[in-house]
Length: 416
Image 1 (cartoon, one colour):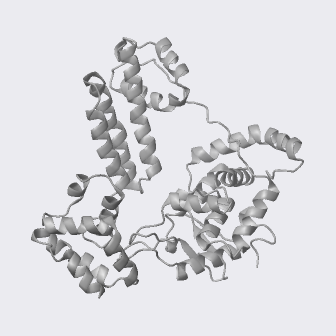
Image 2: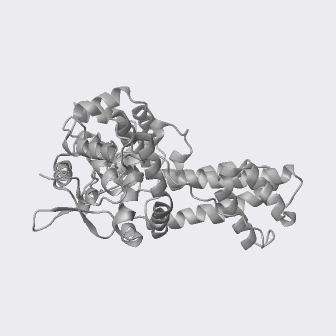
Image 3: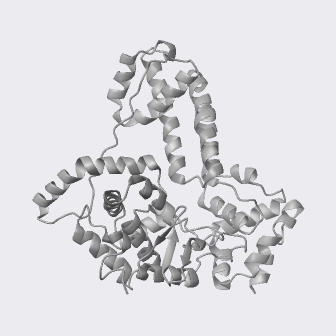
């Protein structure tokens, strides 16, 4: 029945599309959950879009899909075609940045476009491509790059309004802009440095980097211990929530990294202990977390409609698209709905790590930039004592700053 229905959907396929769609037809016909596929074929707008593309007969390419309206159905069809090998994989967040940049700079007034266009294309987008060649380019990175381009456009619009050009810009003018736009320091600084490198403005101009604000949201000892214990022991929580909650509370991992972890990063030593490689070196896991990860690897139920291809990465948290991981937004929503906030837990875990270990070791173990770890260490030394005193006064409870046990799992929480 399923094969017949898939055949009906793709039967109108002609031209190049007919040959291209065979792997998709085979994957749908062999889907592990036929009822899910049948329901999708009957009701989902993506199925109707796919049938229309098949009937048109033109070659299916990323560029052709880029020309369609940016809707969920278009995105899902693309993911399905990539997941079944019809289209080659590409970094979608980078492609989104490139398409947005072209559209945004093309709509700017001519004077602004002459400055912002080259900056966006040859500085921000080119740097994004370099980063994407080394590791996956995240949606968060794309959002930050979009913001950098928007700030450059806002700054050049302000220059036009003030009757100024980059060549005439003085330090007093720049300071006036920075004072009026305190949230745009970082983006303005990047644009000014680029303009100086192109000899478009005074080489002595400086836009001081904004001081990184010390985080203000932390958990105290009892809260963090209770949440970690809940993640490790509460079988009523979804397993993915338990794993993500424990990793963020033990090793300060952001959800963006947790969802990209693959099963091969978990290893079990001859002594029976479980290890997880976060960057280059394996980190010893509390026994209960190691067991959760083993269970996830062997028993994770993929939400994908069709089976992933053999060469697809085996993600610790497989998503609904073959060969893709769970979305960060999905996991964030799950954590919030189960009362496990991420940021305060991560902040506290990071403080504990840098007060116990040298920053360079924290950077190597947790896979963060050495400068980031060093900044955390400096802020911990300068501000953590005052924060502890303030929290003690407010709550009468102590926020742990030097206890090192949590990196190995608190007693009664991570042990057998």
